[in-house]
Length: 253
Image (tube, rainbow, N blue to C red; front, side):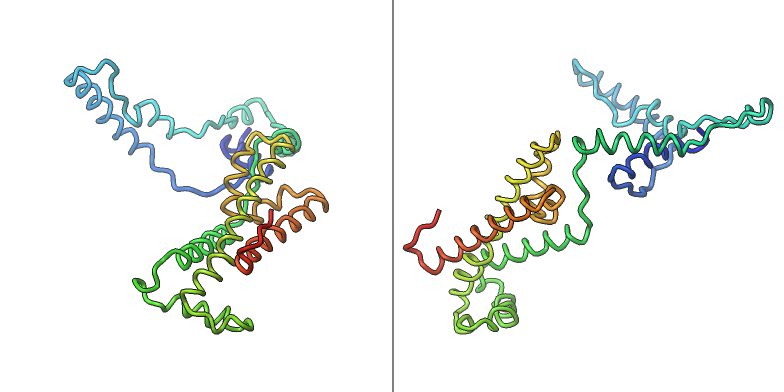
């Protein structure tokens, strides 16, 4: 193998759907210097304090030296003296990637959600939570008046609501509670579908779906039946929350 061995495994991870981010590696000489001072400091400090178990440095000398190598074999001499021609490594990559994608990825992989959806979901939930629970008197009524004027005042009958009623009825009962209920429902459904599919990371599927909602759950919906189930459950949950707000005396399961 003439390419970097770490790149070889990186390409396999990408072929299975994992992210591969370019990161800045701290030079190995820094870790060597850090370990040169860190090891004796931990040793003498442990001896001075009389600790039964000595303090361990974050980086040892051997660990720092590993950063100097990329685990690649140089076959230049074999090429020159023995006329050695290696096999094409891309064939091995393709075969290994196909095997791992079929047998490993379904059990050990949580599908990547684009960064845009992460930002959109978290910002929206944070904004709704703030508008629902924050005190308009303390923060000023600007954010509440702005959202009410440009969104809800265009709906007949809602333009006459006071800010207090707007925060309690619209934001709490018609936006926040349905949002929270739907995300909880999606998280439970994601755990069930992921575990049913044989995933070892079904708990992570649930946590990510709790934050991202349908953006994460959609990767587990393998049939139209699953899609119809999600839409039906969403309509029931949202309708239940809004009906409770309009008719408090009616209890819907």
